[in-house]
Image (cartoon, rainbow over all chains, first blue to last red; front, top):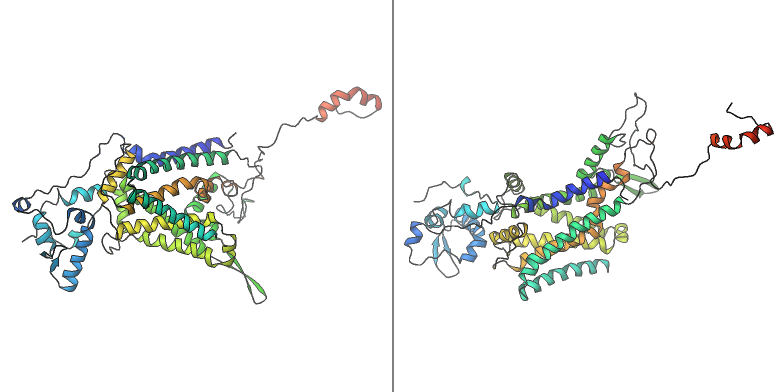
Length: 131
Length: 329
């Protein structure tokens, strides 16, 4: 015997709907994994297609690297980055990173949109300022 | 002992997840099997507990009140603290669930010299509120891993939570608040002698478990980072019932998800069920209308009564003979 059955079942119904709402929201949706494009004229022209770090490192730590770069360039005036291989790069979002990855829509945004991240690069940097 | 056993239990869970994935490589078990199992235990256990509570009768009308009852028209009723109808009860429940109103009234009794003093004690209320709201926001934030595309409302919430723009990935305010609140709630149990005396392993364990979950999440986001895109692929695989385990996710993720699974599986059988129980508290969810509406005790069984009318009908002749006055005729 359930006392106040109507209210209890209504409450449980709401609970279950909330609980399975992520499942319901995804019914009939295909897995759309992001597929960032590495093909830009600059990258295609490179002999060795190598970023400042390994693909795995860049995938997981690029935002921390960019943050370090910002601090080094703007707060300490250092414009040279030495990677784990001992190679030197000029610290610059627009002239180093975006020189190769000039396809923001097909590169940056694919993953950022997928995981719901909104970077604030363009609050300071100007789009298309690559020299 | 209660403290150490709880701490060791949580550390053991961390170790199990680390050994299971980092050493034994059971990624599918820890990434798919255990989360699904924990989800089922949580859902079914929660429903079971609510139905079990639903079977308990409420024999009396027992709302706790702390305000003026509905009375004569010129006496002002306190509609929230002494509700007389459904609207008042709903208002009271909303304040209770969202803002812990009854805890806000918490008092502390202290002996000062030879006088007994009563004062308001709001720290527990504040700590509890800070923890629960952070927990809710963090839970909602995590929906970004389960929904594709991410709804703009969730992105807005994310933006609010990270609006200080400290570091990259941007620091979430709730990450700080939840750890601070949990540490406060733990310190209260550890250092207030009276609270420590009544604290049990079932109080410490959830605190350590939640601290473990928050810490592993923070480590994963800010220090030992994992590839978020792979994490979302795994999470979306779970909710689309097409589970996959991407190859390149670090053990810290599996420690986090195993601790969360443990929390889900533990939830229905623990004190954490106050999440559902708050709705079923008779002292909160009843209107104080016992002078207008008769509360029928569900325990009441049918009683065989012999009314006076029946009595008189049965013994009328004998009563007349004996000269006893009868009402009928």
